[in-house]
Image (cartoon, rainbow, N blue to C red; front, side):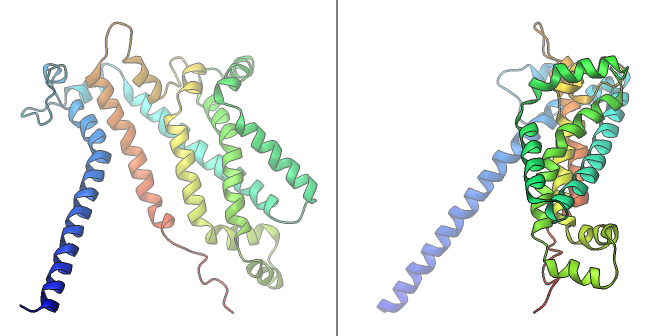
Length: 288
């Protein structure tokens, strides 16, 4: 074997070793990411004796669905699931609708620059306040107008807290649109509203999808407002999960089963909008 062949073999062996380490690293990262969800699912399917056992049982031989049956029959979690879905979908729709309209107006030059900048700074200041600061004012207002323990109270609170995020996020997407597209629409006789929902919205679907995912996740997993503004009728899944924890016990089985139910809608919603997240609808919109 000559020198050239030996060098080629060493280079090839080095590349193979690098690929092996690369795949090992990838599999390790995937395992770290997936393991918490696997542990959540497997805990929801274990018997109580297996949940409390030490050392922990990673691969149980016997599984049960009693925890899922109990949370629907004894805990009545079906109503709480309906509340969470209704609140999250309504919040996402209203926040994205009103936030997109406001962001579109701020992205254009219809208003004076000082007015736009003042509005955006004010919106940003509202978003800076932590939720715990506004919990008591929301509680007092909601109680006095008779909306305590209703779905409307949470929808109003979540939309108000989500609007600044939607406005600032969608503002960047609207500002990145080529101005030539709207000029062409103006030449064709489109009004402001027609340019918004016929031209701008289709081109910013990836931005709307991203914003919708974040709004849905926030409304679905929010706990502070849900615990402060509800008691029984409008209780959400996050509050129910917290009720399985006390100073005397941890109901790991029901809590894990509820946690799995909370993850499933997020996966479904994210899968539904995934095609819009990966598509660059504005690419190649203007030629020349």
